Structure formats: C-alpha cells, structure tokens
Length: 510
Ligand SMILES: [Zn+2]
Image (tube, rainbow, N blue to C red):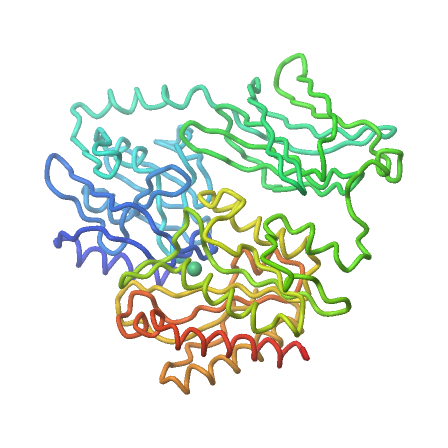
C-alpha cells in the first residue's frame, strides 16, 4: 500500500501545475468496496486561483466533500507523513494534525477534535479527509458556492483565532458507544448508548413484504463497529445501525420486520440510553400465527418475498424444483453507474439482465433485483442500495447470484472483460465463478476483446449474499470502441446469450 501511496504522491506532485476540469465518473474503491462513483464536478479556488488536486479530484461521499489529504496539504506548503502501521496521516504546518483512516477523530497538537466525516481510503492508497477540516486546520476559510460545486478557499489571518473557533461547530455531537440486545422473559430490548443525551426522530417505511421502523439519532456520531444484530423471532428480522448523515451527524437505527410489530421506547434517566422493547418475543409464541411470514418450504415463496419482484406476465410463474438464479443489473434509479460515450451503465446492465432472464426462463427460476429503471429502495444511499440487492437474493434463497456491470477506467484506453469473486468465498463458489468467467472470456475473445482476469475482491454484494456469487464487468463504457459494442443491440444479444450459456453450463441447468 505504501508503494502505491508514494507513487500517487509523485504523480500528484507532477500534475499539480495543470488545471483540468473535474469530470469524474468511474469505478473507485472506497474503503475496500468498489463503487461506481458518479459525482459532481467540484472545483476549488484558493484566494481566487484554481487549485488542482491532480489525479484525485474532490469527492462527494455520503453528503460530505472529501479531498486527498496529501496533495492538498503539500499544495498548501504543509509536510505530510504516512504511517502504515497505525494507518495515520500526520500533517505538519505551524501545528501538527493527525488523523486515522476510518475515523472521524483527529488531533490538533494532541488535542482531540471531531471531523465532519471519517477519513476514507480511496483506491487502496489515497486518504481523503473532509475539506473543511483540512483547509481550516491549515488556516483557511471554506465557502461553498454555486450549489456546492465550487468551493472558495481564502487565507485567514491570524491562524490561532481560526483554530480556537473550530471546536465550536462540533461541540453538540454525542458519540454512540454501544448497541446491544438483551432478552428477559420474552421481552427483547435493543439498547443504544451514547456519551451524552440522545435525541431522536422516529419514522417507518412500509412495503408489501416488509416493514421498517427507524430512529434517527440527532447530532450523533456512530462509534460502534457492530453493524447489525440478527434476531429472526416472530417477524422481527434484525436491527441495524450506521452513520446516516455526516453534517449534521445523524446515526440511523433500523428495525427490519415482516409486519408492523408493536414496541415500546424509553430513555434512561440520564438520557444517554435509548431502549426499544418488544414483548412476546419467545420463539413460537402466539404472535407467530398472525405473522404473514410465508412457509419457507413452499417453492413459490422466495419469489413472492423478494421486495422488488415485479410480475411481468405469466412467464414469471415459478417452476417447481428448478434452481433460482438472481440476476442483479448493477445501479439503477438515481444511480446511473458509470457514464461515457452517451451511454449509462444502468441502462446496459438492465438490458442485459432482461435478455438473460428471457433466455433462462425455461431452465430455472430467474429473479431480478430490479426489472426497470426504478428501484424500490433508495438508490442514492450506497448501503441501502447494495444491501437491498443482497436482501432480494437472500430472501429468495437463490442458488446463484450474478451482478452485471460495465467497467470504466481513469483513461479511455481500458478495454475487455473481467470478473470477480469474494476473497473469503468458499472454494466451490470461486470454482463456479471461474467456469462462468472462462466461458465469457472465450466469448469476448471471439469478438476481439481481451480477458483481464478473474479477480479477488471485497465487493459488498458478493460479501453479503448467502449463495455462490460473481460480479462481471463487461467492457469499458468510457472507451470509444468498447462503447460502440455496448451500444450495438446485436452485440448485447450475443453477450446475453453468452451469459445465459455460461450460467447453464456452470450450474448444470437444463
Ligand atoms: Zn457498476
């Protein structure tokens, strides 16, 4: 990782004198998770002059603008050091600032401060920090203009006044420090503890097949590493916690249910603990009989419970005893995926998925995570988006999951086909993916496209689906000759045929 970091730093230093417009739509690896980033063109000026962050443009992630720590710091004359062992970046200029990958706690001359958002690692080697923290720490004032796509930074004199003023803007946040469940004589209580009084706003989301109750904890920074507690009793499936928004800080706690289950909320006397309790939560109590949760042995059930399964005619009738394949057309809704040459990734992945479904309809039961441009979940929210896709496959008890994507590179010369397996997947899953890969690579070779390989990854949808799974990246949308093939319906028909055949062969489908 250090090598990559050093190399990037060199590239950044060399490219520092060039001014380019930021048009940044590509696959990036965010904290080890690959996402197709498609954000606004964010420009920065410092004292009226354009300020270029080189190959690592500012990114808008989870509502916060982040900038590459090294290129910005060095561009402002600060010294930057990276410690691989502790994953800490140290910036020195008048004062010493230390921040750690993944954390929103930093120190300024040894004094603790809370960042507006955690420090992220992009593409495995570049640390990104909230723009306001970095510039303000270095003695500048930050102002967003033009709907936040232009950020004007101006030097402040004197520096100490600015630093003294800084903690005031974060003083109201509380830290969420514990998230747990207890059971007492059939009453299940989920407790959330903070280091200060918790204020919350409650809401619910109702769908035909599931019901969610959420608590938005206000001015609350999530410090809990546990992301979910599985419950699976009497229709209460699980409870999840995560940072929902960074500025202002909102931590969201979500209860996933089959149906609307009554609960009680109370807060401890000091206000620091929020308890949400459910009665009659012993397994097999009377409530179970009222639960609409279907019989999991019934073949027709998985299709009916998939939240975004939309009937498109009688070809969707499930075939008893046939395997269930979940096809995930990457992106959709608000999330276009990568864009280039007049194409949007979400449109191509959907076209391919619909064609593959039609080709497989007599061989297996096919479910799609979406079968139109819209998604039933909030596609603006990366966690919700990716988890919803996994939920559909998991709830359907699918035998195989394939996620279809189109690649995008930093330059326009990336080309060819690659596919991925989850690094901790069982060997049997990796072997199935290899078969599918080899079969598709042969198809691509016949069309004159190269095989970029079958690669290990930590992608969310592969890590969080319960069945064997693979993710395929079909050509590069920002390469003109790859895009030409992707916009040709004959090519897409052939590719869909190749994907269907690859699945049939690997999974022994009739
Ligand atoms: Zn994609």
